[in-house]
Length: 585
Image 1: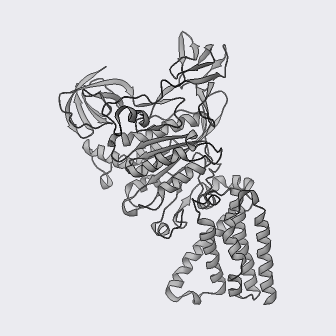
Image 2 (image 1 turned 30 degrees about the vertical axis):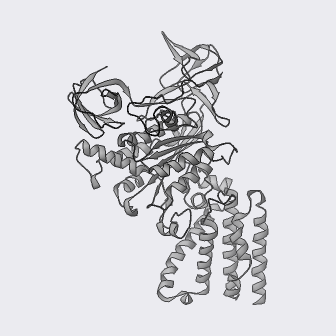
Image 3 (image 1 turned 180 degrees about the vertical axis):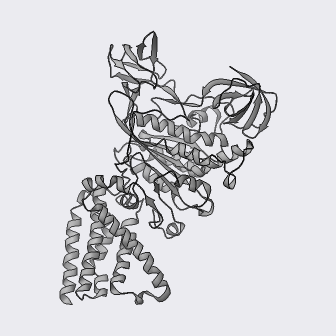
C-alpha cells in the first residue's frame, strides 16, 4: 500500500503528499485512527482526500495509506431490513459498538458475517455460466428471494456447487475459466460510482402505479423513469416519498435520506420498521433498504450516500426486480458538492455550486432505467429514481432544481399554498408535467380504459379553464359568468376536492387502483356532460348544483376496491336525477 503524509487539513478535506501511484477515487486510510477517505483530486504526488468521518484533532505529519480500491458496497443477503449510513456501515451495529454517536475510525462490514443463510443451487456441475447468470438463491425475507448472480467480468464452467447453510463469506460455487478458477460466495463488491452493466436498455412504456390519483392520472412516472419533487419547507416532499415507498408497485424500495434533518430521519427510521406492506401484509422493511445520512453527519459521506443507494438499487434491478429509489433530498447532496468544491478552491459556478453540478446530477439519474439484465435468461428489471429537491424559499430557478429538470422526465411541483389549505398531495396541477404520457398511453388504453387519455385531457382542460375563469371572478364576481362557465367551475372544484385531494391517513383513500381512478373520474366527467346538456335544454342551474347526488360523488372516493360496481349505480343515479330536473323545466 502507498503511504503518504498529511500536509493540510481543512474540515473534511485532507491534502497529503508522497502519494505518487494513487488513483482517482481510491479509498485511503487517514491518520492514526484509520479514518476512511477517498481521493478526489491529484496534482503531481499530492492528493486531495475527502474524509468520511470527523477530522477534528488531526494535523500535518500523520500518515495516509491507500488501499488501491475504489469506494465499494457489499452486495448480498442481508441488505434488506438494513439501515446504513452513507458509506454502508450498519447503524444498528455501530450503536451497539459505540453508542448513539458514531465513533471515529469504527469499521463494520456492510453485511453481517455471522448470519447463516440457506443457499439453494440453481445450476449443476458442467453448466457453462456467463456474467449475470443466477447460480443459486437465498430466501432473504419472507417476500423477497435473493438471487445470487455471477459478477460482471466472470464466466466459466461449474466445477463445484453445493447446497449449504453458510455465511456470506463461504464459497458455494467454483467456476473454471481456462487456467483460472473463480470462487463464488454469497456476496460481491461493486464500486458505488460505477453503474452496473446490463444487456439492453428499454424504453419507458409501462407506468409505475403509485395509487396516488394526481400522479397516476395526470403526471405518471414510467417504470425505469425519473422524477423530481421540488417544493418549499413543509409542502410535503417527504410525505409523498413515503406514500410512494409504501404503495408504488415496485418490489424493492431503497430510501436514501441525504442530509435531511435528524428528526425527519428519526421519523423514517422509527416508522418504517412498523409499517405493514399493503401488497403482502408483511413488514414493509422486508423489501426495503434504508440509507440514513443526516445533516449533522460528515458532509463527505452525504455526497457518497446517493451513490451507495444507487449501487444497491442496481443490484436488485439486475436480479429482475422492479426497484424504486427515493432520494431525500438531492439539494443537500448538491450542497455537499459545493462545500467540497470550495475547499478544493475550484472555480465556482452559479450560486457557488461547482461547474460540474449538471453533469453529476445527470450521472446519478441516468443510472435509472428498465433493462434486460446480463445473463442467459434475459430477465427484465427496472430502477425508477425519485429525487426530492429543497430549493431555498421555494425558488425553482435556483441551480439544483434547474439542473434536475434538465434531466428528469416528471416534475411534481409542490405548492405551499395547497399545503396550507390542507390539500394533499400538494402537487400543483398547473405547473407539474410528465413527459411519459405519450409513451405509456398504449398501456393505459389496454389496461385501464380505451378513453382514459381523452378523459385525462378533458379533466386537465377543465382545471385550466377554471384558472382562467378565476381571473374574471376576482375582477367582477361570479355573477358575471355564464351558466355554462359556472358549471365548469363546479366541475373543476369536484375534480380538485373529490379526485385530486387524497387522505393518506384514511384506510381506503390512501390508495386508489387504476380501475377505481378510471371509474371515479368517469362519474365526475359524466355529471359535467349531463349537466351541460341539461343547461342547454333550459334546466335550472341552482337545481343542478343542489342535487343530492353531488354529495354521493364526493363520497365515492371512499368506495372500497372490492365494490367498484357501485360506480355504475352512481352514474345511473346521476342520469336519472338530472333527467328529472330537465323534465321539471
